[in-house]
Amino acid sequence: MKAKIIVMPKRTVLDPQGKTVKHALESMNFAGIKDVRVGKFMEIEIEGGNKAELQKKIDEACQKLLSNPVIEEYTFEISH
Amino acid sequence: MHFGVIQFPGSNCDQDAYHALTDVLDQPTRYIWHKDASLGDVDCVVVPGGFSYGDYLRTGAIARFAPAMKAVIDHAKSGGLVIGICNGFQILCEAHLLPGALIRNRVLKFICDFVHVRVETTDSPFTNACKKGQVLRIPIAHGEGSYFAEPRVIEQLQRDDRILVRYCTKDGEITDAANPNGSLDNIAGICNETRNVFGLMPHPERASEELLGSDDGRMIFDSILQHANKGRREAVRVG
Image (cartoon, rainbow over all chains, first blue to last red; front, side, top):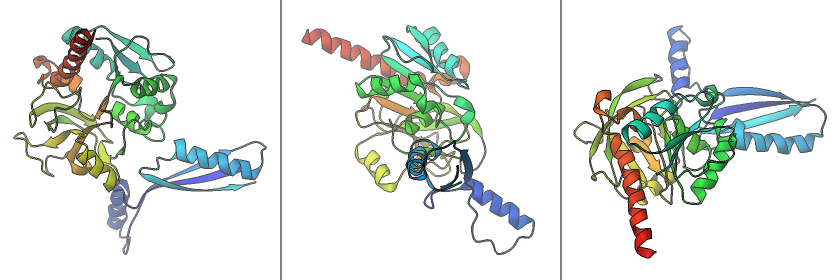
């Protein structure tokens, strides 16, 4: 099975990286951009196990290690 | 007073801290490898600056799980002193010994420069040798030093007098221009609720002797020693 995890800076947290990317996009004449935010994408491949159990494990991993809940939020999906 | 300096792969201010503690302050100090599960007879732990584990994932995120950090957490919970400098501050936040997080500087640059910080309270083992409002000239060297926490956490830090140092002008004024990295409320360093754990982005160990351009950082270490001596005197009186 494979877990795909997206970690993004919270809306309330300043994202200077996203802002800089926005400026760069604008300087290549990409008009009309409202906002850019830069996050992380992770893939974890797992051998065996059941999906419900994995759901719990990945959630715990996101809480404790893969994201910092003070500044980031996460979503993930698990597929075969 | 026995000091211990934690060494993670990627720590690079461990030797600066060791030098300041041994050669300048003449205190028994030893290194503690990140794989050591015990701190030994250490009274004060220094979590030094650097780029532990290459800053992978987030600054301080991996270091938090090192065996030595479990021992540091136990040490802190039983009232032992812990000072986290720069990456050490980031690690202490990730380990939940201090609230909040350090995010990327608002200017997106790695800043390596002398800054001024104002001592906001002398009611801590780390600032008791200073005067309230005293301005210290200490260098910073970081890319992720912008302190962030939810508004209610910032309010609590203010209410409990837990912001020990804030970025200021050389005259001690708290202004936005004097804030090098975008830290909320110009926060440069905070302590925990029980006041025995201190994290700060500036490097007092790099400003502990005139030869380095400033010896203001020494005030932080002198405070720790003064605190220890006071504890010893009180213990003698009780005994």
